[in-house]
Length: 518
Image 1 (cartoon, rainbow, N blue to C red):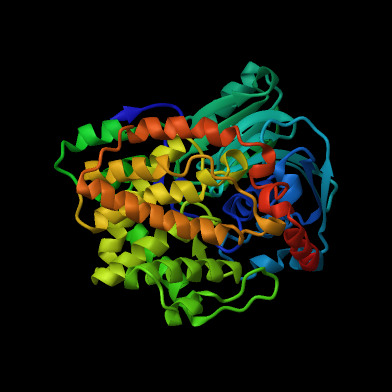
Image 2 (image 1 turned 90 degrees about the horizontal axis):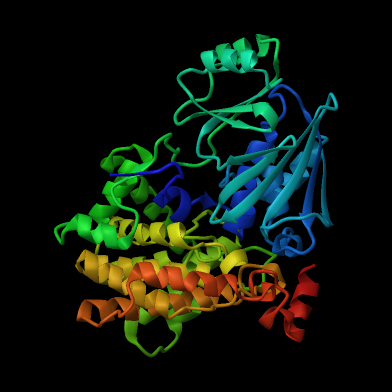
């Protein structure tokens, strides 16, 4: 069993999920989670008076925070909504009704990450708190500063922040109250003690005990905002594809290896892992059926197109028809603000499930078989999360639709009865085919060329899976492929990493569409 201080990726936190509404997992879902955390900086009983969010003008989030609903997500978060709340898209209006003044400002400040949120929240009694957070892709986040003190919080723990005078006597008293918690220090002389718990929020009685201490100036309790909580001492049975294949010894299917991994990672049973993935499969199925039934939403570029496939004469037979139609249906459902599963992101939410579910329906396979395929795909996503990124702002579309294609290739092999090695090889071949994909969404909307990218990556997955099952040589291992691809995506000019400032996003027709939508 592998142990380390840093958390290992989770299939449900980092890869397949969140369940959400909105165009972007980074901007919308990630923002909801960040908003939920910043809300907790002020007393639960106090009303929010003002909320200021600043973006550095040199970053992609400054260009797309409105079109990809980061503003909506943050407002929803401070109102206590989750990522799939049906009222989410009305959050700015609802915040205004509650008397909250929200301002988004594009300015200049030093930052190293393209999705940096610098936030100030003020309550009705003029108490001011600050937080700086990063949305790092797929709905995941990192908080880097709270009230002027550098921290490293990812939303995976229940965390108690104890601000104090830094004196040894005070800190010993704090540690005695929190003796069954894992404690770290931040700030000069440890003037912030952070106590982590994997399962529960600090009991109110202990919070009161801390506040009674003479040297304690404030206590803030942050809830876990991720579906699978982190562990104080994280452990997994393997941490790379090579280690995984050795662990399985050719006897375990990839979906079974995924169960072993996620059960250890999240300290939950394998039955719970399977059940949770099956619930996500139900949401994916519903997204297809809802999209095929027809969707309506005024503020989007593309309307219903999946219906065209049913009546068109296509090359390639019924499976080709199904893959195009079902991937399109999920994208249409997403663009109409329906509930989807980011797999691995909102922009890439349709390639993986659209391909897997199409093949399963063609082959007469049930949801349990789809669940196994999704678990296998999620395991490949874990390695991508570990050695690369799912963020289009960081790695272009190869990080989003490209990653989804590699995961889908694995899922197809699993569906068709292939072994773990074939499933891993399929992912390697698929990922080798998508290197350097740019992310240039028109008008900042995650619709064009995102739909075509998802469909193309679905067929790349199908071809790669067939090649792996047939015995083609992948040449380069999955682990090395991921590590080789990552710096290529990161080296793309910023114009081609989800800023809508390059490629087809700046053509004359694209600008006309953007102006019409604005």
